Amino acid sequence: MFDIKKGDQEFYIEKNGEKLGAIQYVTEGSNQNGKETLTITHTMVSDELKGQGAGQALVKKIVEYARDENKAIIPECSFAKHIIEKNEDYKDVLV
Image 1: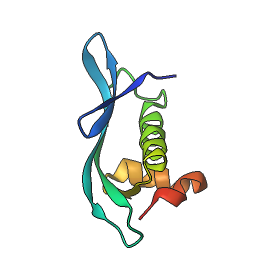
Image 2 (image 1 turned 180 degrees about the vertical axis):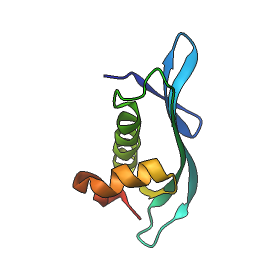
Image 3 (image 1 turned 90 degrees about the vertical axis):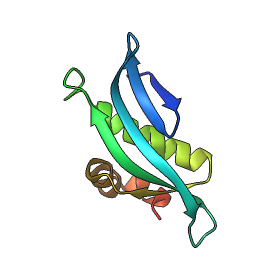
């Protein structure tokens, strides 16, 4: 399990003050349903965390955040797009 923190337009995993993983987004205008949108622009995981599910945990965190805040997601980042589109449980947050 990862301790994921919220930063300025990102969620990140940190160890000893160093970011080892992050998912970054831009807050945009509203979609046709009136929900503010979060465009995921980039997901990064360090070599130290690769293969441990850190990227998937970051995607899950932003999906949960979008649900809690009644926002929609546009996944421009190819990694986030792949994870969100293949997971039926995440489809409700897509624009």
